[in-house]
Amino acid sequence: MESNYEQIHRLSEQYRFYTAGNLSKLVQIKSLSLQEEEVQHELVRQMHEAGFDEAHIDGFGNVIGRIGSGRRILAFDGHMDTVDTGNMANWAFDPFGGEVRDGYVLGRGTADQKGGVAAFITAGRILKELGFDRDMTIWFVGSAVEEDCDGLCWKYIVEESGLRPELVISTEPTSLGIYRGQRGRMELHVSFRGMSSHGSAPERGENAIYMAARAALEIEKLNERLISDEFLGKGSITISEIISGSPSLCAVADYARLHIDRRLTWGETKETAIAQLQEIIAGMEASVETLHFSEKTFTGLTYGMEKYYPTWVIPENHPAVQHGANTFRSLFKHNPVIDKWTFSTNGVTINGYYGIPVIGFGPGDEVMAHAPNEKVRIDDLVKAAAFYAAYALSF
Image (cartoon, rainbow, N blue to C red; front, side):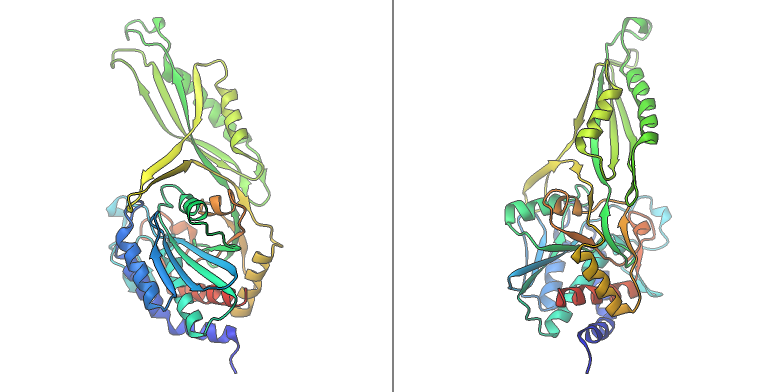
């Protein structure tokens, strides 16, 4: 008689092209941040087709699917928005073609990260076929606006919907490793106020661009001395944009602004990052501010948060990580890689703000994220679907 793991493994293989086909349909619908409405309706349709007990779009624009109605709450998360294509000359195939060939599904969002969502749809179908009857509620979240403001979707879910799972599994790409953390990040502006004068007599004024340039050189040095963590690696800081203003192009600039991308390793906080910049600009007519995101989603809701995304780490001996490792070994007969993401995920609010444990397991490779010729292995989709179903069934 087959064990649960053997049944799940067999069914995930049986639904190989069901999973790939669902992903292909999702990829064919372009879904930039704030423009996810069409793909979200397709996701709801797929959930209903798979036999989910419930599927709807919430007030923010997230798709919320449900299986079960028990006491314990487990959630899977995968964002449905993608970045744009960039220079089309770099693509060898149609990014929205959703081709299924040579063992891959091809196109924008296959790895980052509609592939994880297609896999959890199949996991839900498998659980329903196995007669899932545990004292659990499993929520499957197709989240919105992650690319523009990671974690905002889950801020809405926790604070406005009141949903607070015991554990969330992020389906962002992990090359089928189990991930347990990431560096945080911040977006900041450093603004400089000078004094304009005629360009023929710059000594009469105070050039804000020169102030910004001196600060920029110190910021470059700051990057070299930021602390490092054994697991997450080093913090980083870079200037991603500089703008300036003056009364005319024949005048000394009286304004300049640096846009800062700050990555925070373990032990760094919003306060320490701001203090480091304030030390650099001490004595200048300058200020530091953390930015705020606020935009209208496709539902018509305007919602936002500070653009501070905390660092988070789950200990390797945490039950969620260990259960993931045991599930992986039971299914695939070897040990998983336990690691971290380089990029940022919705875990910044789920764990960073609300303390809800998060682990990651997803099909596809992180290096495919935001890259041309994005693709995901169908084998990865199959294994991810099996992992999600087995993790939930034995949770």
